[in-house]
Structures are given as C-alpha cells and as structure tokens.
Amino acid sequence: MNESTVRVSVPLPGRAYDILIGEGLLAEAGRHLAPLLRRPRVAVITDETVSALHWPALQAGLAAAGVASDVLVLPPGEGTKGWPALERCCDWLLERRVERGDLVLAFGGGVVGDLVGFAAAILRRGVRFVQVPTTLLAQVDSSVGGKTGINTAQGKNLIGAFHQPAMVLADIGLLDSLPPRAFLSGYGEVVKYGLLGDAGFFDWLEAEGPAIAAGERVARREAVRRSCEMKAGIVLRDETEQGERALLNLGHTFGHALEAATGYSDLLLHGEGVAIGCALAFALSARLGLCPQEDPGRVAAHLAAMGMRRDLSGLGEALPGPEGLLGLMGQDKKVVDGQLRFVLARGIGQAFVTPEVPRAAVLALLEEALAG
Ligand code: GLY
Image (tube, rainbow, N blue to C red):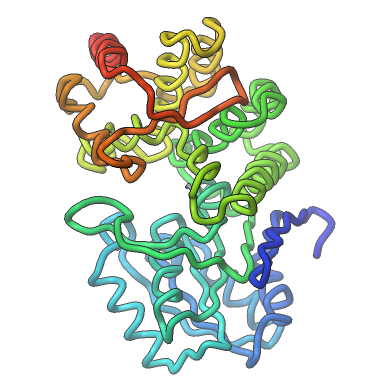
C-alpha cells in the first residue's frame, strides 16, 4: 500500500472487507487483488466512458502483478441499469466460465457498481466481486455496503440483492477526470454524512469544501475516508436496513421525487436531488420545531458556497404541484404500510427516521419551495 493510501475496514462476520482509498490504486490493483485470487485472472465490466479514460491504467496495474483480465464495455448511463444489460453481463461471465472462486470487477460509477454487483450476486448463486468506483458518488456511497440491483419500468432499484464486495479500491486520482457538475453531485452525498450523523464533519466540510472541490489531495482523501467510515459503521450495525441504515436516505425522499419528476434526466443529477432534499429535510425539521431555526440556513449556505443547487429554481417547469410531488414521494421504498417515513433532524449531525409528519406541513413546505 503506498503511503497516500488509507484503509477503512468493514468487519461484517464472514464477509469482512477493506476499502482502500488513495491515489494510484489502479496501478497497484493487481497487487491488492492477488491475495484474493484463486487463479491469476479477473473479469472486468465497465462502461464506454470509464473504459476510454481509465481501462489502460487498470489493465496495466493488473498485468504488473501477473493478473490477466478480460473486459466487457457497456454503454454509459442509467439506461444500462436494467434487465437487458444484466442478461448481457451474466451471459458474458458464464461464457468466460467465471466461477465462484473468481473475482468480477465492477469498474465505474454507481450504475456499473449496482448492475455488476447484482450480476455477481446471482451468477452461480453468488460469485465474489470487487468495486473499483470511479465517481465521487460511487466512492462515498454506492460502492460500499452491498446494495446491488437494477431499475425496472416500475421504478429505480426495485430488483436487487444485498451482496457485499470482497474489496473496494477507491482511487481518488480518478476524480480529476470528472466534470465539475458530476463531482459536486457526489459531494451532495458527502454533505449528507455530516448532516446525518457528524456535526464535526459538517464543520470541517464548511471549512474544507472549496479545497475538496479544487482537488486538494489530503482533503479529498479525508472526505472520502470519513464518508466511507460512517457508512461502514452504519452498515455494520444494520446491514439490511431494518433501522439505522435508513438514515443514509437523508434527503432521498424529496430527492427521489424530484428525480422522478424530472424524468431521471440531466436536468437533475442524483446527488443534486439529494442535496436539495437535505435542504428541504432541514427546512421541514425546523418548521416542525425539531431542529434549531438557524440550521436550514446553514445547510443552504454551505451548498451555495459550493456552487450547488439547494432549491427548486430552474426545475419549476418540469415539476408537478405539491400534491404531485407528495404522490411521487409515496413511491419511495421507505413507505411502510402505506405510510411515508421521513428522515428528519434534531440538529446538524442528528438525523432520525419518523413516520409522524403531518401531510399539511409537507405540502406547505413544497408549495413554498415551488414558489421559489
Ligand atoms: N445508499 C444508501 C445505502 O446504501 O443504504
């Protein structure tokens, strides 16, 4: 491990794994994976964007340790995360006679990680896989914790499985190739961790956010490390989301409704929806007298300082009215017995889940937010 690399462990009984976070990890991939390999070959699945930018580096990093690799390159984008691509991945892996003792590498952002993780979960009733996340969103959230799956006509992530990776290699050097908007979208998930459970981390983000966005190495690595550490802790205590793991959905109930209303298009990226959703969750918490009145302003101010969206401006025409948005929130996976559960906060770093939110308060908040 080079000296810039840090390790976060996820000691789940029987399926413990490490998340390595640092620079130059693609070049070292073969060395890190070799101890996990039964034979010196891996099957890699990626998308066209990542392949063009980074596949030569990963292939060379594997070959340097004598690990042969075969690659399947899929079209980029959310549209790939469905049944046809899942079938393609499974057929391709079976044609290559990938066995349970082998490793499949999911090399890309959240779409590739979720899809390939799910293919690995169902192939031969479960083969091991490694996440090599290439976006900030994937490095701090989707590559950790074992949620895998695909979208269907009925909604996002409705078919899937919990299948933990055997390792996560988060090379922060790859974040340099992200368009700034995609980077900041991922930063929405980083802010979420501070807001849901670590006020000190949020303080730190307020100070270091601009350096993180500007590419400062130590700050970037620390932002990814702390996010992964927080997620690992929650996953350890509640792997299958019976309770605490739902806190990771702070901002997501509002965010998913906004994403659905904008057709999962470029109008609103996932992390942008999460950031706006966090701002709305704090506004709702303050309105209900749950958190200090100054907290929503502080959340919005940090998002504004980072040049991020924090309200519905620019989305207005694409959105239905308050009732329509509330209806879309009702499609959320967190609905239990028809009752919507919200992640709200008693303050920055103190999120909790509650089903007890008056409908009128949500509608009033949405009405104001839509009026801008
Ligand atoms: N992205 C939320 C979770 O992994 O639970």
